[in-house]
Image (tube, rainbow over all chains, first blue to last red; front, side, top):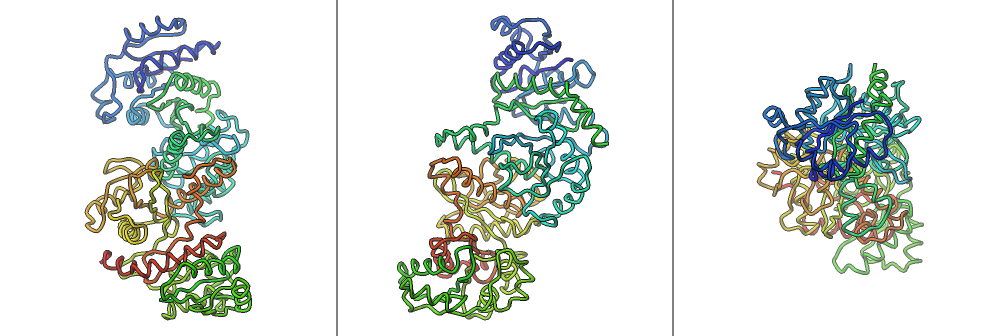
Length: 312
Length: 312
Protein backbone atom coordinates (compact mmCIF):
# COMPACT_ATOMS: atom_id res chain seq x y z
CA UNK A 1 0.00 0.00 0.00
CA UNK A 2 1.46 3.31 -1.11
CA UNK A 3 0.05 6.68 -0.06
CA UNK A 4 1.16 9.91 -1.71
CA UNK A 5 1.30 13.20 0.15
CA UNK A 6 1.64 16.63 -1.42
CA UNK A 7 4.23 18.24 0.90
CA UNK A 8 3.83 21.71 -0.63
CA UNK A 9 0.08 22.19 -0.14
CA UNK A 10 -1.39 24.26 2.67
CA UNK A 11 -0.41 27.41 4.51
CA UNK A 12 2.19 25.70 6.70
CA UNK A 13 3.86 23.50 4.10
CA UNK A 14 6.16 21.66 4.08
CA UNK A 15 6.89 21.91 7.83
CA UNK A 16 3.50 20.77 9.17
CA UNK A 17 3.32 18.00 6.56
CA UNK A 18 6.70 16.68 7.76
CA UNK A 19 5.56 16.77 11.37
CA UNK A 20 2.34 15.01 10.36
CA UNK A 21 4.33 12.25 8.71
CA UNK A 22 6.43 11.86 11.86
CA UNK A 23 3.34 11.61 14.11
CA UNK A 24 1.79 9.08 11.80
CA UNK A 25 4.95 6.94 11.60
CA UNK A 26 5.22 6.80 15.37
CA UNK A 27 1.74 5.29 15.63
CA UNK A 28 1.77 3.06 12.59
CA UNK A 29 3.10 -0.50 12.47
CA UNK A 30 1.66 -1.59 9.15
CA UNK A 31 3.58 -1.99 5.89
CA UNK A 32 2.54 1.26 4.24
CA UNK A 33 4.86 3.24 1.97
CA UNK A 34 4.69 7.00 1.76
CA UNK A 35 5.57 9.06 -1.28
CA UNK A 36 6.36 12.61 -0.21
CA UNK A 37 5.93 14.87 -3.20
CA UNK A 38 7.56 18.30 -3.33
CA UNK A 39 10.81 20.24 -3.11
CA UNK A 40 13.29 17.42 -2.34
CA UNK A 41 16.09 19.40 -0.66
CA UNK A 42 13.63 21.27 1.57
CA UNK A 43 11.78 18.09 2.54
CA UNK A 44 15.02 16.13 3.12
CA UNK A 45 16.34 18.89 5.36
CA UNK A 46 13.18 18.94 7.47
CA UNK A 47 13.05 15.14 7.70
CA UNK A 48 16.62 15.11 9.04
CA UNK A 49 16.01 17.99 11.42
CA UNK A 50 12.95 16.27 12.86
CA UNK A 51 14.61 12.82 13.01
CA UNK A 52 11.95 11.25 10.86
CA UNK A 53 12.83 7.57 10.25
CA UNK A 54 13.49 7.00 6.56
CA UNK A 55 12.14 3.47 6.12
CA UNK A 56 8.95 3.37 4.08
CA UNK A 57 9.55 6.92 2.88
CA UNK A 58 10.41 8.01 -0.67
CA UNK A 59 10.72 11.61 -1.70
CA UNK A 60 9.44 12.47 -5.19
CA UNK A 61 10.86 15.75 -6.34
CA UNK A 62 8.49 18.39 -7.74
CA UNK A 63 9.91 21.58 -9.22
CA UNK A 64 6.74 23.63 -9.02
CA UNK A 65 3.94 24.52 -6.65
CA UNK A 66 0.36 25.39 -7.52
CA UNK A 67 -0.50 28.41 -5.45
CA UNK A 68 -3.67 28.55 -3.33
CA UNK A 69 -5.26 31.22 -5.53
CA UNK A 70 -4.31 30.03 -9.00
CA UNK A 71 -6.97 29.11 -11.52
CA UNK A 72 -7.26 25.31 -11.13
CA UNK A 73 -7.52 24.16 -14.74
CA UNK A 74 -4.96 26.64 -16.03
CA UNK A 75 -2.49 25.85 -13.25
CA UNK A 76 -2.76 22.08 -13.71
CA UNK A 77 -2.21 22.42 -17.44
CA UNK A 78 0.71 24.81 -17.18
CA UNK A 79 2.44 23.39 -14.13
CA UNK A 80 3.02 19.76 -15.08
CA UNK A 81 5.89 19.61 -12.60
CA UNK A 82 3.86 20.83 -9.66
CA UNK A 83 3.39 18.55 -6.66
CA UNK A 84 -0.34 18.25 -7.38
CA UNK A 85 0.10 17.42 -11.09
CA UNK A 86 2.80 14.85 -10.28
CA UNK A 87 0.59 13.39 -7.55
CA UNK A 88 -2.27 12.78 -9.94
CA UNK A 89 0.09 11.35 -12.51
CA UNK A 90 1.44 8.85 -9.96
CA UNK A 91 -2.07 8.00 -8.78
CA UNK A 92 -3.48 7.53 -12.28
CA UNK A 93 -0.54 5.35 -13.36
CA UNK A 94 -0.89 3.07 -10.35
CA UNK A 95 2.39 4.12 -8.66
CA UNK A 96 0.40 4.98 -5.58
CA UNK A 97 -3.02 4.04 -4.15
CA UNK A 98 -4.18 7.28 -2.55
CA UNK A 99 -3.33 10.99 -2.78
CA UNK A 100 -3.53 13.68 -0.12
CA UNK A 101 -3.12 17.43 -0.43
CA UNK A 102 -3.97 20.53 1.59
CA UNK A 103 -3.24 22.69 -1.43
CA UNK A 104 -5.43 24.41 -4.02
CA UNK A 105 -8.87 22.80 -3.55
CA UNK A 106 -10.00 23.57 -7.08
CA UNK A 107 -6.90 21.98 -8.57
CA UNK A 108 -7.42 18.90 -6.42
CA UNK A 109 -11.02 18.59 -7.61
CA UNK A 110 -10.19 19.19 -11.25
CA UNK A 111 -7.27 16.77 -11.01
CA UNK A 112 -9.51 14.11 -9.49
CA UNK A 113 -12.29 14.52 -12.01
CA UNK A 114 -9.93 14.44 -14.99
CA UNK A 115 -7.32 11.89 -14.01
CA UNK A 116 -9.05 9.38 -11.73
CA UNK A 117 -11.89 7.25 -13.06
CA UNK A 118 -15.33 7.66 -11.59
CA UNK A 119 -16.77 4.43 -10.19
CA UNK A 120 -18.93 2.62 -12.73
CA UNK A 121 -22.37 4.21 -12.95
CA UNK A 122 -21.52 7.26 -10.83
CA UNK A 123 -23.02 10.35 -12.49
CA UNK A 124 -20.67 12.71 -10.69
CA UNK A 125 -18.31 12.31 -7.72
CA UNK A 126 -19.17 14.21 -4.54
CA UNK A 127 -17.54 15.75 -1.49
CA UNK A 128 -18.91 15.53 2.01
CA UNK A 129 -18.31 16.96 5.44
CA UNK A 130 -18.46 15.62 8.95
CA UNK A 131 -21.26 17.22 11.00
CA UNK A 132 -20.81 17.16 14.78
CA UNK A 133 -24.07 16.10 16.41
CA UNK A 134 -25.27 17.62 19.67
CA UNK A 135 -25.40 14.20 21.34
CA UNK A 136 -21.68 13.62 20.70
CA UNK A 137 -22.19 11.58 17.55
CA UNK A 138 -20.98 12.33 14.05
CA UNK A 139 -23.01 12.76 10.89
CA UNK A 140 -22.09 13.06 7.23
CA UNK A 141 -23.48 15.79 4.97
CA UNK A 142 -23.19 15.57 1.21
CA UNK A 143 -22.80 17.12 -1.36
CA UNK A 144 -21.11 20.23 0.06
CA UNK A 145 -20.26 22.09 -3.10
CA UNK A 146 -18.97 19.98 -5.94
CA UNK A 147 -22.42 19.72 -7.52
CA UNK A 148 -24.39 22.93 -7.13
CA UNK A 149 -27.18 21.64 -9.39
CA UNK A 150 -28.22 18.02 -9.06
CA UNK A 151 -30.64 15.50 -10.50
CA UNK A 152 -32.64 13.24 -8.16
CA UNK A 153 -30.54 10.25 -9.26
CA UNK A 154 -27.40 12.03 -8.03
CA UNK A 155 -28.85 12.55 -4.58
CA UNK A 156 -29.78 8.89 -4.56
CA UNK A 157 -26.15 8.00 -5.31
CA UNK A 158 -24.91 10.39 -2.61
CA UNK A 159 -27.13 8.47 -0.17
CA UNK A 160 -25.48 5.17 -1.12
CA UNK A 161 -21.91 6.50 -1.10
CA UNK A 162 -22.53 8.36 2.15
CA UNK A 163 -23.95 5.23 3.77
CA UNK A 164 -20.93 3.12 2.80
CA UNK A 165 -18.59 5.83 4.10
CA UNK A 166 -20.53 6.23 7.34
CA UNK A 167 -20.45 2.48 7.87
CA UNK A 168 -16.84 1.70 7.02
CA UNK A 169 -15.09 4.92 8.04
CA UNK A 170 -17.30 6.49 10.71
CA UNK A 171 -18.22 3.10 12.14
CA UNK A 172 -21.99 3.61 12.13
CA UNK A 173 -23.46 0.14 11.73
CA UNK A 174 -26.76 1.02 10.02
CA UNK A 175 -26.58 4.67 9.00
CA UNK A 176 -29.92 6.50 8.94
CA UNK A 177 -30.27 8.49 5.72
CA UNK A 178 -32.24 11.74 5.76
CA UNK A 179 -33.21 13.97 2.86
CA UNK A 180 -32.62 17.63 3.71
CA UNK A 181 -35.92 19.38 3.14
CA UNK A 182 -38.24 22.19 4.23
CA UNK A 183 -40.86 19.94 5.80
CA UNK A 184 -41.25 16.48 7.27
CA UNK A 185 -43.94 14.90 5.12
CA UNK A 186 -43.40 13.23 1.76
CA UNK A 187 -44.41 15.64 -1.00
CA UNK A 188 -42.84 18.67 0.72
CA UNK A 189 -40.00 20.63 -0.76
CA UNK A 190 -38.68 21.95 -4.02
CA UNK A 191 -39.01 19.95 -7.22
CA UNK A 192 -35.67 18.21 -6.63
CA UNK A 193 -36.54 17.07 -3.10
CA UNK A 194 -40.01 15.96 -4.19
CA UNK A 195 -38.54 13.85 -6.98
CA UNK A 196 -35.74 12.47 -4.80
CA UNK A 197 -37.92 11.24 -1.95
CA UNK A 198 -39.47 8.25 -3.80
CA UNK A 199 -36.04 7.18 -5.09
CA UNK A 200 -34.61 7.11 -1.57
CA UNK A 201 -37.72 5.39 -0.24
CA UNK A 202 -37.34 2.54 -2.71
CA UNK A 203 -33.56 2.27 -2.45
CA UNK A 204 -32.74 -1.10 -0.87
CA UNK A 205 -29.09 -0.19 -0.29
CA UNK A 206 -29.82 2.46 2.33
CA UNK A 207 -31.81 2.93 5.51
CA UNK A 208 -33.97 5.94 4.59
CA UNK A 209 -35.77 7.67 7.46
CA UNK A 210 -37.48 10.43 5.49
CA UNK A 211 -37.09 14.19 5.29
CA UNK A 212 -35.06 16.12 7.82
CA UNK A 213 -35.28 19.88 8.34
CA UNK A 214 -32.70 22.55 9.10
CA UNK A 215 -33.36 22.07 12.80
CA UNK A 216 -32.43 18.37 12.55
CA UNK A 217 -28.99 18.84 10.96
CA UNK A 218 -27.19 19.07 14.31
CA UNK A 219 -29.48 16.53 15.99
CA UNK A 220 -29.34 12.75 16.09
CA UNK A 221 -32.12 12.26 13.54
CA UNK A 222 -30.07 11.18 10.50
CA UNK A 223 -26.45 10.01 10.13
CA UNK A 224 -26.18 10.61 6.40
CA UNK A 225 -27.76 13.87 5.25
CA UNK A 226 -28.30 14.30 1.55
CA UNK A 227 -28.78 17.48 -0.50
CA UNK A 228 -27.47 19.24 -3.61
CA UNK A 229 -24.14 21.02 -3.26
CA UNK A 230 -25.62 24.51 -3.05
CA UNK A 231 -27.54 24.00 0.18
CA UNK A 232 -24.83 21.71 1.54
CA UNK A 233 -22.14 24.31 0.98
CA UNK A 234 -24.17 27.01 2.73
CA UNK A 235 -24.71 24.69 5.72
CA UNK A 236 -21.01 23.75 5.86
CA UNK A 237 -19.74 27.32 5.74
CA UNK A 238 -22.36 28.53 8.20
CA UNK A 239 -21.28 25.74 10.56
CA UNK A 240 -17.61 26.70 10.11
CA UNK A 241 -18.44 30.29 11.01
CA UNK A 242 -20.05 29.11 14.25
CA UNK A 243 -16.70 27.89 15.48
CA UNK A 244 -15.08 31.21 14.71
CA UNK A 245 -17.89 33.14 16.40
CA UNK A 246 -17.62 30.85 19.40
CA UNK A 247 -13.88 31.54 19.58
CA UNK A 248 -14.34 35.31 19.33
CA UNK A 249 -17.10 35.29 21.94
CA UNK A 250 -14.97 33.04 24.14
CA UNK A 251 -17.67 30.41 24.35
CA UNK A 252 -16.02 27.56 26.13
CA UNK A 253 -18.01 24.53 25.08
CA UNK A 254 -16.87 21.09 23.95
CA UNK A 255 -19.62 20.86 21.39
CA UNK A 256 -18.83 24.14 19.66
CA UNK A 257 -15.15 23.17 19.63
CA UNK A 258 -16.09 20.30 17.35
CA UNK A 259 -17.05 22.81 14.65
CA UNK A 260 -13.34 23.39 14.20
CA UNK A 261 -13.21 21.56 10.90
CA UNK A 262 -9.41 21.61 10.80
CA UNK A 263 -9.23 18.76 13.27
CA UNK A 264 -10.97 16.35 10.88
CA UNK A 265 -8.02 16.45 8.57
CA UNK A 266 -9.73 16.62 5.22
CA UNK A 267 -12.52 15.38 3.08
CA UNK A 268 -12.29 12.55 0.57
CA UNK A 269 -13.74 12.79 -2.92
CA UNK A 270 -16.35 10.03 -3.06
CA UNK A 271 -17.36 8.18 -6.19
CA UNK A 272 -13.91 7.81 -7.72
CA UNK A 273 -11.81 4.67 -7.99
CA UNK A 274 -9.07 5.74 -5.56
CA UNK A 275 -8.96 7.77 -2.34
CA UNK A 276 -8.20 11.44 -2.89
CA UNK A 277 -8.22 13.48 0.30
CA UNK A 278 -8.49 17.25 0.18
CA UNK A 279 -7.26 19.06 3.26
CA UNK A 280 -8.03 22.48 4.68
CA UNK A 281 -5.49 25.17 3.68
CA UNK A 282 -4.68 25.78 7.32
CA UNK A 283 -3.96 22.10 8.03
CA UNK A 284 -1.50 21.51 10.85
CA UNK A 285 0.53 18.40 11.71
CA UNK A 286 -2.44 16.67 13.32
CA UNK A 287 -4.58 17.26 10.24
CA UNK A 288 -1.88 15.77 7.99
CA UNK A 289 -1.56 12.75 10.27
CA UNK A 290 -5.34 12.30 10.23
CA UNK A 291 -5.44 12.51 6.45
CA UNK A 292 -2.83 9.76 6.13
CA UNK A 293 -4.80 7.68 8.63
CA UNK A 294 -8.02 8.30 6.72
CA UNK A 295 -6.62 7.20 3.37
CA UNK A 296 -5.02 4.15 5.01
CA UNK A 297 -8.39 3.24 6.57
CA UNK A 298 -10.20 3.76 3.28
CA UNK A 299 -7.72 1.45 1.54
CA UNK A 300 -7.81 -1.19 4.28
CA UNK A 301 -11.60 -1.27 4.35
CA UNK A 302 -11.71 -1.19 0.57
CA UNK A 303 -14.30 1.60 0.70
CA UNK A 304 -14.20 2.22 -3.05
CA UNK A 305 -14.93 -1.44 -3.88
CA UNK A 306 -17.81 -1.52 -1.41
CA UNK A 307 -19.28 1.63 -2.95
CA UNK A 308 -18.97 0.10 -6.40
CA UNK A 309 -20.89 -2.98 -5.25
CA UNK A 310 -23.63 -0.98 -3.58
CA UNK A 311 -24.01 1.31 -6.57
CA UNK A 312 -24.33 -1.57 -9.02
CA UNK B 1 -56.08 52.80 11.21
CA UNK B 2 -57.58 49.45 12.22
CA UNK B 3 -55.51 46.40 13.08
CA UNK B 4 -57.07 42.96 13.45
CA UNK B 5 -55.71 40.37 15.83
CA UNK B 6 -56.59 36.69 15.86
CA UNK B 7 -57.06 36.06 19.59
CA UNK B 8 -57.34 32.28 19.20
CA UNK B 9 -54.04 31.58 17.40
CA UNK B 10 -50.97 30.25 19.15
CA UNK B 11 -50.31 27.87 21.99
CA UNK B 12 -51.18 30.35 24.74
CA UNK B 13 -54.30 31.89 23.21
CA UNK B 14 -56.28 33.87 24.09
CA UNK B 15 -54.53 34.75 27.39
CA UNK B 16 -51.17 35.89 25.98
CA UNK B 17 -52.89 37.79 23.17
CA UNK B 18 -54.96 39.71 25.73
CA UNK B 19 -51.84 40.53 27.74
CA UNK B 20 -50.08 41.60 24.53
CA UNK B 21 -52.94 43.97 23.74
CA UNK B 22 -52.70 45.43 27.24
CA UNK B 23 -48.94 46.01 26.95
CA UNK B 24 -49.37 47.61 23.58
CA UNK B 25 -52.19 49.91 24.76
CA UNK B 26 -50.10 51.16 27.68
CA UNK B 27 -47.36 52.29 25.32
CA UNK B 28 -49.45 53.57 22.43
CA UNK B 29 -50.95 57.04 22.18
CA UNK B 30 -51.95 57.04 18.54
CA UNK B 31 -55.48 56.68 17.20
CA UNK B 32 -55.37 53.02 16.25
CA UNK B 33 -58.37 50.72 16.56
CA UNK B 34 -57.98 47.06 17.35
CA UNK B 35 -60.35 44.33 16.23
CA UNK B 36 -59.95 41.33 18.50
CA UNK B 37 -61.25 38.28 16.67
CA UNK B 38 -62.23 35.14 18.54
CA UNK B 39 -64.47 33.68 21.21
CA UNK B 40 -66.21 36.82 22.50
CA UNK B 41 -67.19 35.69 26.03
CA UNK B 42 -63.72 34.28 26.68
CA UNK B 43 -61.99 37.41 25.38
CA UNK B 44 -64.37 39.76 27.24
CA UNK B 45 -63.77 37.88 30.48
CA UNK B 46 -59.99 38.11 30.13
CA UNK B 47 -60.11 41.81 29.15
CA UNK B 48 -62.10 42.54 32.31
CA UNK B 49 -59.88 40.38 34.51
CA UNK B 50 -56.77 42.15 33.20
CA UNK B 51 -58.30 45.63 33.38
CA UNK B 52 -57.69 46.28 29.71
CA UNK B 53 -59.13 49.70 28.77
CA UNK B 54 -61.95 49.28 26.28
CA UNK B 55 -61.50 52.40 24.14
CA UNK B 56 -60.25 51.60 20.65
CA UNK B 57 -61.11 47.94 21.12
CA UNK B 58 -63.85 46.00 19.35
CA UNK B 59 -64.38 42.29 19.77
CA UNK B 60 -65.44 40.38 16.67
CA UNK B 61 -66.93 37.05 17.60
CA UNK B 62 -65.66 33.91 15.86
CA UNK B 63 -67.38 30.58 16.55
CA UNK B 64 -64.59 28.37 15.33
CA UNK B 65 -60.84 27.92 15.62
CA UNK B 66 -58.49 26.49 13.03
CA UNK B 67 -56.27 24.10 14.88
CA UNK B 68 -52.46 24.24 14.55
CA UNK B 69 -52.31 20.92 12.73
CA UNK B 70 -55.29 21.17 10.40
CA UNK B 71 -54.83 21.10 6.64
CA UNK B 72 -54.73 24.80 5.69
CA UNK B 73 -56.86 24.85 2.52
CA UNK B 74 -59.40 22.39 3.85
CA UNK B 75 -59.71 24.17 7.18
CA UNK B 76 -60.16 27.60 5.62
CA UNK B 77 -62.85 26.27 3.30
CA UNK B 78 -64.75 24.36 5.95
CA UNK B 79 -64.37 26.76 8.86
CA UNK B 80 -65.75 29.99 7.48
CA UNK B 81 -66.49 31.13 11.02
CA UNK B 82 -62.99 30.59 12.30
CA UNK B 83 -61.02 33.57 13.58
CA UNK B 84 -58.54 33.29 10.69
CA UNK B 85 -61.23 33.07 7.98
CA UNK B 86 -63.12 36.03 9.50
CA UNK B 87 -59.87 37.96 9.77
CA UNK B 88 -59.13 37.58 6.08
CA UNK B 89 -62.71 38.44 5.22
CA UNK B 90 -62.47 41.70 7.21
CA UNK B 91 -59.07 42.50 5.72
CA UNK B 92 -60.15 41.82 2.13
CA UNK B 93 -63.33 43.87 2.51
CA UNK B 94 -61.44 46.86 3.89
CA UNK B 95 -62.86 46.67 7.42
CA UNK B 96 -59.32 46.50 8.73
CA UNK B 97 -55.87 47.45 7.44
CA UNK B 98 -53.65 44.69 8.82
CA UNK B 99 -54.11 41.19 10.22
CA UNK B 100 -52.06 39.35 12.81
CA UNK B 101 -52.19 35.72 13.90
CA UNK B 102 -49.97 33.26 15.74
CA UNK B 103 -52.21 30.43 14.55
CA UNK B 104 -51.90 27.84 11.79
CA UNK B 105 -49.08 29.18 9.59
CA UNK B 106 -50.26 27.33 6.51
CA UNK B 107 -53.78 28.72 6.85
CA UNK B 108 -52.35 32.23 7.25
CA UNK B 109 -50.29 31.82 4.09
CA UNK B 110 -53.12 30.30 2.07
CA UNK B 111 -55.50 32.99 3.36
CA UNK B 112 -53.07 35.73 2.36
CA UNK B 113 -52.39 34.34 -1.09
CA UNK B 114 -56.06 33.81 -1.86
CA UNK B 115 -57.76 36.79 -0.27
CA UNK B 116 -55.27 39.66 -0.36
CA UNK B 117 -54.08 41.02 -3.68
CA UNK B 118 -50.42 40.73 -4.58
CA UNK B 119 -48.75 44.05 -5.34
CA UNK B 120 -48.81 44.84 -9.04
CA UNK B 121 -46.09 42.91 -10.87
CA UNK B 122 -45.14 40.70 -7.92
CA UNK B 123 -44.65 37.15 -9.19
CA UNK B 124 -45.15 35.62 -5.76
CA UNK B 125 -45.24 37.07 -2.25
CA UNK B 126 -42.43 36.07 0.12
CA UNK B 127 -41.67 35.61 3.78
CA UNK B 128 -38.49 36.68 5.48
CA UNK B 129 -36.70 36.33 8.78
CA UNK B 130 -34.56 38.58 10.92
CA UNK B 131 -30.95 37.34 11.16
CA UNK B 132 -28.99 38.51 14.23
CA UNK B 133 -25.55 39.68 13.13
CA UNK B 134 -22.47 39.02 15.23
CA UNK B 135 -21.68 42.74 15.42
CA UNK B 136 -25.05 43.46 17.06
CA UNK B 137 -26.78 44.48 13.85
CA UNK B 138 -29.78 42.91 12.22
CA UNK B 139 -30.09 41.42 8.76
CA UNK B 140 -33.02 40.19 6.70
CA UNK B 141 -33.05 36.82 4.94
CA UNK B 142 -35.63 36.00 2.26
CA UNK B 143 -37.31 33.83 1.05
CA UNK B 144 -37.47 31.44 4.01
CA UNK B 145 -39.89 28.84 2.72
CA UNK B 146 -42.86 30.20 0.81
CA UNK B 147 -41.13 29.66 -2.54
CA UNK B 148 -39.03 26.51 -2.55
CA UNK B 149 -38.36 26.83 -6.29
CA UNK B 150 -37.69 30.28 -7.71
CA UNK B 151 -36.93 32.04 -10.96
CA UNK B 152 -34.16 34.66 -11.09
CA UNK B 153 -36.79 37.41 -11.45
CA UNK B 154 -38.31 36.36 -8.14
CA UNK B 155 -35.00 36.70 -6.31
CA UNK B 156 -34.63 40.11 -7.91
CA UNK B 157 -38.03 41.10 -6.48
CA UNK B 158 -37.10 39.70 -3.07
CA UNK B 159 -34.07 41.99 -3.16
CA UNK B 160 -36.28 45.04 -3.75
CA UNK B 161 -38.93 44.13 -1.20
CA UNK B 162 -36.26 43.21 1.35
CA UNK B 163 -34.47 46.51 0.81
CA UNK B 164 -37.66 48.54 1.35
CA UNK B 165 -38.42 46.55 4.49
CA UNK B 166 -34.87 46.90 5.82
CA UNK B 167 -34.99 50.63 5.19
CA UNK B 168 -38.42 51.48 6.58
CA UNK B 169 -38.84 48.86 9.29
CA UNK B 170 -35.32 47.91 10.36
CA UNK B 171 -34.06 51.47 9.91
CA UNK B 172 -31.07 50.61 7.73
CA UNK B 173 -30.51 53.65 5.54
CA UNK B 174 -28.88 52.01 2.53
CA UNK B 175 -29.26 48.26 2.89
CA UNK B 176 -26.50 46.18 1.33
CA UNK B 177 -27.99 43.32 -0.71
CA UNK B 178 -26.09 40.04 -0.98
CA UNK B 179 -26.89 36.99 -3.09
CA UNK B 180 -26.46 33.80 -1.09
CA UNK B 181 -24.05 31.65 -3.02
CA UNK B 182 -21.29 29.05 -2.85
CA UNK B 183 -18.48 31.38 -3.92
CA UNK B 184 -17.63 35.06 -4.03
CA UNK B 185 -17.01 35.69 -7.72
CA UNK B 186 -19.64 36.39 -10.34
CA UNK B 187 -20.29 33.21 -12.33
CA UNK B 188 -20.16 30.96 -9.26
CA UNK B 189 -23.10 28.96 -8.06
CA UNK B 190 -26.01 26.93 -9.29
CA UNK B 191 -27.93 27.89 -12.42
CA UNK B 192 -30.35 30.04 -10.42
CA UNK B 193 -27.63 32.05 -8.68
CA UNK B 194 -25.68 32.44 -11.91
CA UNK B 195 -28.74 33.83 -13.68
CA UNK B 196 -29.75 36.04 -10.74
CA UNK B 197 -26.40 37.81 -10.31
CA UNK B 198 -26.64 40.00 -13.46
CA UNK B 199 -30.22 40.98 -12.61
CA UNK B 200 -29.19 42.18 -9.15
CA UNK B 201 -26.11 43.89 -10.56
CA UNK B 202 -28.22 45.94 -12.93
CA UNK B 203 -31.04 46.65 -10.52
CA UNK B 204 -31.07 50.40 -9.78
CA UNK B 205 -33.47 50.04 -6.86
CA UNK B 206 -31.03 48.17 -4.65
CA UNK B 207 -27.47 48.42 -3.39
CA UNK B 208 -26.04 45.07 -4.53
CA UNK B 209 -22.71 44.08 -3.02
CA UNK B 210 -22.29 40.69 -4.76
CA UNK B 211 -22.33 37.09 -3.60
CA UNK B 212 -22.19 36.15 0.05
CA UNK B 213 -21.31 32.69 1.35
CA UNK B 214 -22.62 30.63 4.23
CA UNK B 215 -19.87 32.04 6.45
CA UNK B 216 -21.12 35.60 5.80
CA UNK B 217 -24.72 35.04 6.86
CA UNK B 218 -24.08 35.94 10.50
CA UNK B 219 -21.51 38.61 9.63
CA UNK B 220 -21.94 42.28 8.73
CA UNK B 221 -21.37 41.74 4.99
CA UNK B 222 -24.95 42.13 3.70
CA UNK B 223 -28.12 43.49 5.32
CA UNK B 224 -30.57 41.89 2.90
CA UNK B 225 -29.71 38.30 1.98
CA UNK B 226 -31.51 36.80 -0.96
CA UNK B 227 -32.07 33.14 -1.87
CA UNK B 228 -34.82 30.74 -2.86
CA UNK B 229 -37.04 29.45 -0.09
CA UNK B 230 -35.40 26.04 0.14
CA UNK B 231 -31.97 27.23 1.21
CA UNK B 232 -33.51 30.08 3.24
CA UNK B 233 -35.70 27.71 5.19
CA UNK B 234 -32.76 25.41 6.00
CA UNK B 235 -30.73 28.41 7.25
CA UNK B 236 -33.63 29.71 9.35
CA UNK B 237 -34.37 26.40 11.03
CA UNK B 238 -30.68 25.67 11.59
CA UNK B 239 -30.36 29.09 13.23
CA UNK B 240 -33.42 28.41 15.40
CA UNK B 241 -31.86 25.16 16.56
CA UNK B 242 -28.73 27.03 17.65
CA UNK B 243 -30.73 28.87 20.26
CA UNK B 244 -32.15 25.64 21.60
CA UNK B 245 -28.72 24.00 21.68
CA UNK B 246 -27.33 27.06 23.44
CA UNK B 247 -30.08 26.80 26.05
CA UNK B 248 -29.49 23.10 26.63
CA UNK B 249 -25.74 23.58 26.85
CA UNK B 250 -26.28 26.55 29.17
CA UNK B 251 -24.30 28.86 26.94
CA UNK B 252 -24.81 32.26 28.46
CA UNK B 253 -24.18 34.64 25.61
CA UNK B 254 -26.11 37.72 24.52
CA UNK B 255 -25.54 36.94 20.88
CA UNK B 256 -26.88 33.41 20.99
CA UNK B 257 -29.89 34.68 22.95
CA UNK B 258 -30.84 36.70 19.88
CA UNK B 259 -31.47 33.45 17.99
CA UNK B 260 -34.60 33.12 20.11
CA UNK B 261 -36.91 33.97 17.23
CA UNK B 262 -39.94 34.25 19.51
CA UNK B 263 -38.86 37.69 20.63
CA UNK B 264 -39.19 39.15 17.15
CA UNK B 265 -42.94 38.72 17.27
CA UNK B 266 -43.59 37.43 13.81
CA UNK B 267 -42.86 37.72 10.15
CA UNK B 268 -44.86 39.76 7.62
CA UNK B 269 -45.84 38.41 4.23
CA UNK B 270 -44.15 40.76 1.77
CA UNK B 271 -45.45 41.56 -1.69
CA UNK B 272 -49.14 41.78 -0.81
CA UNK B 273 -51.27 44.92 -0.60
CA UNK B 274 -51.81 44.85 3.17
CA UNK B 275 -49.72 43.82 6.17
CA UNK B 276 -50.30 40.24 7.27
CA UNK B 277 -48.14 39.21 10.20
CA UNK B 278 -47.62 35.54 11.00
CA UNK B 279 -46.52 34.79 14.53
CA UNK B 280 -44.72 31.85 16.09
CA UNK B 281 -47.05 29.27 17.64
CA UNK B 282 -45.42 29.78 21.01
CA UNK B 283 -45.90 33.57 20.94
CA UNK B 284 -46.16 35.16 24.37
CA UNK B 285 -47.54 38.57 25.38
CA UNK B 286 -44.40 40.39 24.26
CA UNK B 287 -44.52 38.77 20.83
CA UNK B 288 -48.17 39.80 20.40
CA UNK B 289 -47.33 43.36 21.45
CA UNK B 290 -44.42 43.40 18.97
CA UNK B 291 -46.63 42.13 16.17
CA UNK B 292 -49.17 44.92 16.76
CA UNK B 293 -46.30 47.43 16.82
CA UNK B 294 -44.87 45.97 13.61
CA UNK B 295 -48.13 46.21 11.68
CA UNK B 296 -48.67 49.74 13.00
CA UNK B 297 -45.18 50.72 11.85
CA UNK B 298 -45.70 49.12 8.45
CA UNK B 299 -48.93 51.07 8.02
CA UNK B 300 -47.48 54.37 9.26
CA UNK B 301 -44.46 54.09 6.98
CA UNK B 302 -46.69 52.93 4.13
CA UNK B 303 -44.31 50.05 3.43
CA UNK B 304 -46.62 48.41 0.90
CA UNK B 305 -46.94 51.59 -1.18
CA UNK B 306 -43.16 52.10 -1.15
CA UNK B 307 -42.64 48.51 -2.30
CA UNK B 308 -45.16 49.04 -5.08
CA UNK B 309 -43.25 52.11 -6.28
CA UNK B 310 -39.86 50.40 -6.13
CA UNK B 311 -41.17 47.33 -7.95
CA UNK B 312 -42.70 49.39 -10.76
